[in-house]
Amino acid sequence: MKNIMNINGYDAVITYDPEIEMFRGEFINLNGGADFYAADIKGLHEEGSTSLKVFLEMCEEDGVAPKKTYSGKFNVRISPKLHEHLVLKASATGKSINQIVVESLSSNVGSEL
Image (cartoon, rainbow, N blue to C red; front, side):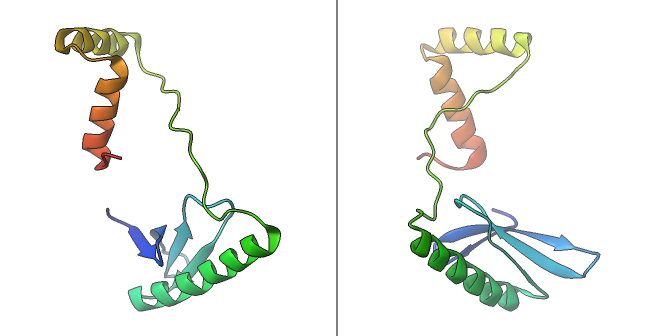
């Protein structure tokens, strides 16, 4: 994926901050915040590793799991017309609305987990 860097098994979103002319990395899916800055890719890896190490040490000290857990459930708001078409497609294909949504999300996000 664009703008995602994996550092030691943890994903970080990378953006560019034109005000300071540096790249910013922010780890995602953590039970807390951990970010880092660097001027180039090598620096991002180095600073990201350092930031992650500090974060993981703090989690261990506090007895907190570093990664968030997810239930697999979330609410989505759609237009009534889209809802109608979704029901129609599910009925026509012999699938549940959930199956149609999971297939669509998997196709667009790139995951079949």
